Image (tube, rainbow, N blue to C red; front, side, top):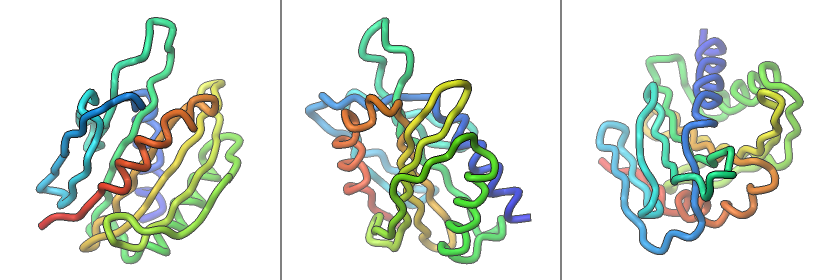
Amino acid sequence: MMRGRIKRLVALCSVCILAGSVHVHAQQVRTYTNKNLHFKLQYPADFQVKTINGAIILSSPLKSQKDTFAESVNIVTLGADRGVNNLKDFYGQARKSMQETMLKVKIIEDKKITLGGKEAYLLVYTSLRKKTTFKFMQVMTMNDRLVYVVTYTALPETYEEYLRPVKAMLNSFAFVK
């Protein structure tokens, strides 16, 4: 049952791939606060924030008319009512599900970190989607029995270019009451 929900979460993250972008040249920041999900983070002021199927998508406009893919940072949550008991088990099942359902997955980095002062798992990997290889950074943490999955998606050739503002967003992530 939980495995099916994890597969749906992986699929939801996949839907979010094409939804937004991260722009590195932003000078000012804004704060996004979600009182229902009890978190906040800072993001570049030129980003747009939208919600699609429960996923929060932070995106900026394409850099030019020739730019065909918009990088994005997406946040999805999964609650305790969905069978999530602890972060370690969720992470293990999510990682296994990702490798079973995604094409040509190559794990680049897999380690424990913190997000918002909580234990978290960071996973960097590439995968083939619709004949295009994407590079992902996923951070998963748990707070009050709610799992938070933050996913940065980019083309491999633009991943490093957008990594600095993404790390700033992750460093600003905080849980609120």
